[in-house]
Image (cartoon, rainbow, N blue to C red):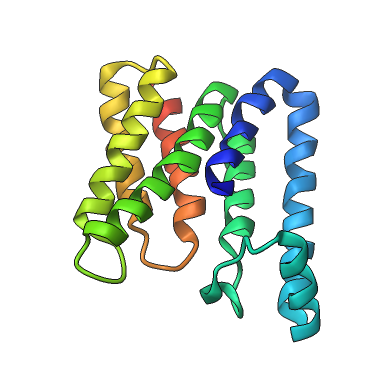
Length: 175
């Protein structure tokens, strides 16, 4: 649920404008880096940060960067590198499509890891978000496929960086 809620950062950034959003994303990345470094520095620090996060971290994130940290970086990079409208849509896509892929993939996929049902759910969720942003039909198709391919990134957490970057790049290119 936190993953989906984080998508509000895209529209909020556009409303706030670049003068506010650009340094806000920098602050978000700094906070994420400090939290990750603290969390990974010791068992005691990890327990403290995990307690503050209220169970937001998955068990598999104990000794590795968290999805929250990589997602913050992905959002910030999309905002810094691409036009605001493309970044806004890409952030919302990343917030919605990745959880859709995880939910459907874990339920209907053949086992652990990325699955075709998860990738299809990712593409469908991305397409719905992009249609709500009034992206052209070609843009919806291209960016939704791009999101699904980026979501399949094989290294843990890289999809949280790849999805917003790929979607923003494709939308920036297509507009």
